Image (cartoon, rainbow, N blue to C red; front, side, top):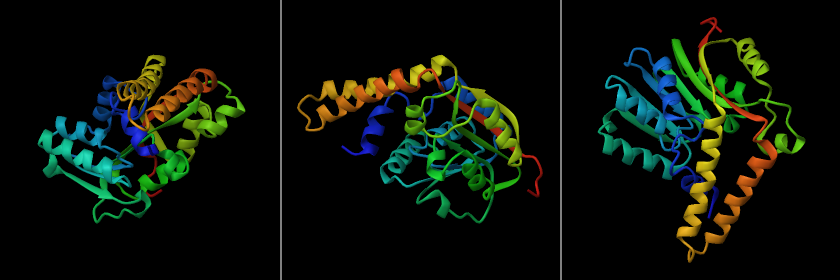
Length: 247
């Protein structure tokens, strides 16, 4: 079973692929889409959950999603048809850095996809190329809540602490107009859900040829979370505007 298939099973009960609960997602969308008439782009949209929620609650929003996974985009398209928002959603199967649009977007989203761009600041650089004047970026990425072990850094990436992360964003020409630090409950709920969903799938499909691999993966990832990074990893969501529109 490949990584994408495992991720799909792991997120079956937590389609927002970040440690955020429904109330936090709703609040971030409210702050990021204040008029309900925005053009929205999601770089690394996966199954399109952020866009689907934005479209369902705001009949004036039009959205586009970019991702390299054909399966995830097919899932997003099917969900959009079920919700009746397919006419306001365009999906593009390509690398985010290759995506070009004739018109800029009022809002650019990217959650949990910074690794694909090489980090938080490169993600913001990609978002900047698509953002209309006065637009907003909604972005989510990790930070260190406490000094990490070398094993944690090698496993998750070379993040900074919360204050340094925000200072780097500000120095890059952005002003936070809102934000959210995921709570311990959100962080724990996300991990329990992911590895619990994988474990349940394996136990429910004992005769599947990948069952043992999936159960082993779930056990390993749960152990890594509990022993390596649970007490150090945090997740930060920001609503950003450009400090100087000419930047």
